[in-house]
Length: 418
Image (tube, rainbow, N blue to C red; front, side, top):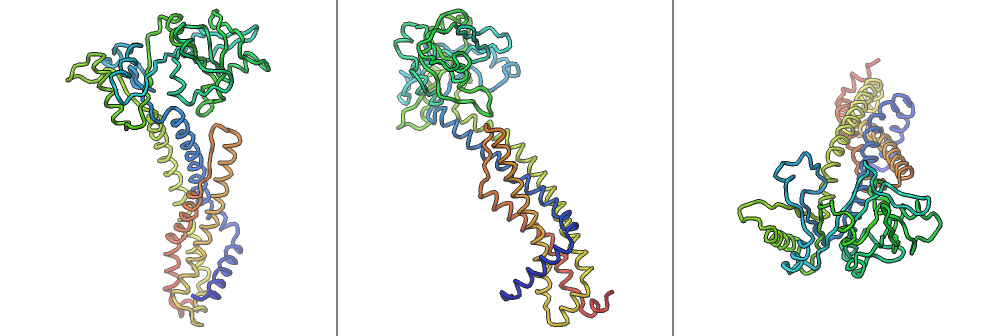
């Protein structure tokens, strides 16, 4: 096909689609729905994947967590043998650090969360905050969790921990609620009635999907936490590895040290759990797997409907233009010329739907990112190319049968057609 013939075919295809605006618009609707769904959902998932990866890296890329039960699990649904595991002890961290050459340091922390009973309160003057996470930490905690970076002031020191000082580091939301335009550093707040000096404020972090993040955290020395909340026995240990050791080596040494410390027989399972920040990525992949499957089904249905519509309109077009096909063949048009002409029309029809779908998907992603900044939807060029490729493929696949049927028509029969 020469360049002139190609341009002529494109011109004829555009004119044909323009002559049947309503029919063409209804035909491409299914393709628009399918491509829009793919682009919008893929953009949201890509943005959230980036957010998850960033959060995992800020939780410590070379850090392991030792817990009594698996993280992010409903305790009531776990088997009894897991629920009755003995609690971790503060001494476990020191033992792991000493017994494992791959361990740089190990730090203990504990939580107090009572959102339902509302038993915890931070008060300054007439202002108070009730819904927050209270965490007892050691000085190395901030190294294990880069997410908890201090913006103003300082973090808990070894001196604070050694003397169980009444000092506290608070999140940005807590600071704004208590002090408004005042400088919180050096101020004394009442934590459940006890005076604590504010020594630092964390960098802003709203949390994943605008849920509870560092902004809603308050940290006090672990030694002080232990004295103030003796009823809380649950402990967590963060273990940081040395750079020269792999994560597999680190995990193996930590597991062996914990089994020795807790006197676990060689033929018994661990009575503790070791995980890394990657468990968030794994959990997220499980959650998005169902969403991707559902999106694929919706998109496939939309594209199938659109493809059937393209085939239908092209078959009608073949019938309506039978005489035209006969004339073109009579003046020398080959089967391949007729086939290309109708394939081009089908492809252009689906491509228009694909372009509209891409634009609508990008618009939805932009709208989501604007209205919900916590969901950083991002339109990837890869998905734009994929969406356009899918629309072209639909046009070629569903347009081939009508195009081939038109190409195989007998020119004599076509010229007699009325």
